Length: 305
Length: 305
Image (cartoon, rainbow over the protein chains, first blue to last red):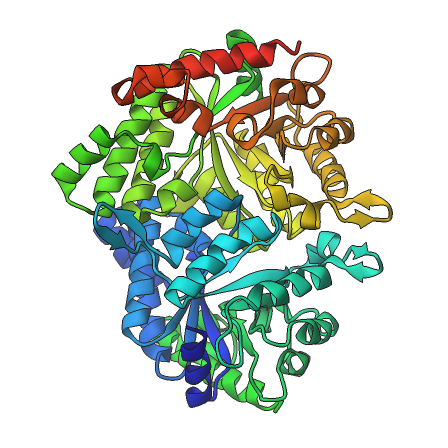
């Protein structure tokens, strides 16, 4: 799947991913009202509104971006109906040719990680059948439990040519509390980066591994170091735009081949219609606003090369 | 909810929790066959088998244990039908008076953690209604992202009198790779423990906080240290039984009041019928085997006081 991602990034000249994190307040009122009219004030209404909203965004950006990253928490908060919309969104995006990165940040002891891996990027065996549940192309994974919590994900990546992005240095303000702590003079995130590099050696594509890393745009100096520590890892970069990262901060995340990183924007694209200059499209033009914001982001990021 | 947990532990004299981690191979063949006969070789069949299995276990232990801990990964691997069984299991256990600890190990940046908190222990607002989705009593949380990833869970705990258990030192063999690394001479798990203690100060019950910790039974020396670092945190202790922890290892996890820890066993109880001495109950007696194993565990753990 890393091959597919790299090919699509090259073809569209867009190392960007649209975060499908549909917070309730991002959804235009006309969509919310219609869903509530149909389903009442229920979780089903929320799930239906999210689905309609997503479909508009996906239709508007699928020919200009290589990938989407649905954040499962935004669906899980609406319970089973919300997770049905997550599933439907994953399926629809794949139909449209998008690479789907499930932002699930799972991670547990070995046997439990194996179940998460099966459910999100692998299959389960029921009798004679191998069945896939959510079946994203990539997922994000939390490293706090160490190698035996990560290995089951890697095993599934190898078997089914899927991929993972492991949290190394996250984009949030408090990420340094634990991640920046020095161990023998070197920060924890760097140590985790070294493990990512080692784990990734087990499943290499051509130039890049199936095992990537998450490094926030908000810490460009650390991005520079981590690029060197993990030369073969694709870096998924959150934090651009709304969280404060700018294009010039992003140069160190890329390799000399112009590849090696994919930058996420969520709110800055899917809720673009709420802010200037895209507010001119209005609520009803939220999808076109998202398209224009994605085109601007592409240009902005390509300006660094 | 910490009050309710402590009261139930005292009343039943059983600081134990049954892990509802129904791996496919733990489920007796007669249950699996019946589910496949009814639903074919589908995710629905898997979910139905898990539900029937769980119901048997819950009915057999609900009068002797205070709490259960469903591991969501074991349900999530079966996609939407699996998660419907998770929901049904949570609801059923609460009906039976059990305290439900959702073992979900979620954790993300602030706005995303807020969505997880809403979906698992809080509510979402749709129009005029406040709706709860999964509505567990407690959940487990991953600390890798630091304070701003934890605070939204604490806010919901305060508002709705729910609780969380934060991963401090996990029971798996590789847990030391990052968690044991020394920072200014002190291991990372101890630093996380100090944060748990600080975070927990924001939402105290009578003697214990709504914010607890996960510390594996497999590392009793560390358990001893962490007990002192987090005197007011209830400790959820996985790793007893199948993972190798024994009753004598558990003494340091408790406070002098005989409280402060709750020990989990999953496989050792729910799959007891597969091993001596409980295999005498056979597949059809899996629920009675679980009850007997839980009674033995209660006695075993009480022997340390």
